[in-house]
Length: 212
Image 1: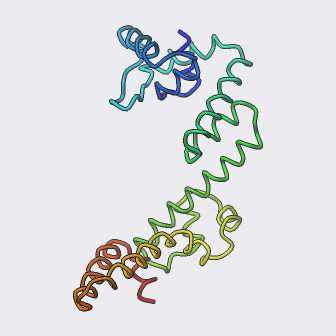
Image 2: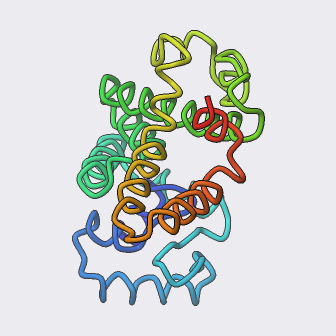
Image 3: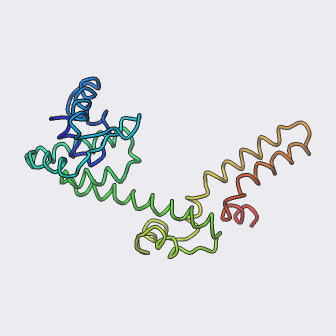
């Protein structure tokens, strides 16, 4: 029951290894508890990566209702700290658990990172499809955030472009350096152009940036 209660706090879907750590059980103990709950049609395994899910929302709600408010907040905080230590990039989950734990400032920081991630992802998609003509307003609309949120993180379009294409430009530079080591200069040039075309074939924004 303790493992399932922890799982309920983590969400409708939860990671079994994380639930085991939070419930202070070994992974083998957690797997045994999961197998029993699975036979009772409470949870099911979503795949082979340890992801589990409650079969019905009502079952999860019942488990949450049995937890004291203080215990629930404590579990949310411990979950957030575990996630932060394991993978600080899981900003959606961090914001959720810090907020539920009453750690509003830390939730807001995680939420800010989440918004930045949404902005960068949306910008990559837009610039790849439409090229550099896309505006910051377009990015905000595609990301589902306010225009002010975009401008607070990227004061200019150039700042956003730098954040998006920095890794790609570095990769192109590395390819160019590798091409220079080819003994036959023409072969090296052809090799560089082929790799550059592969990178820019599906990314209009990168293509326009390289050719500008």
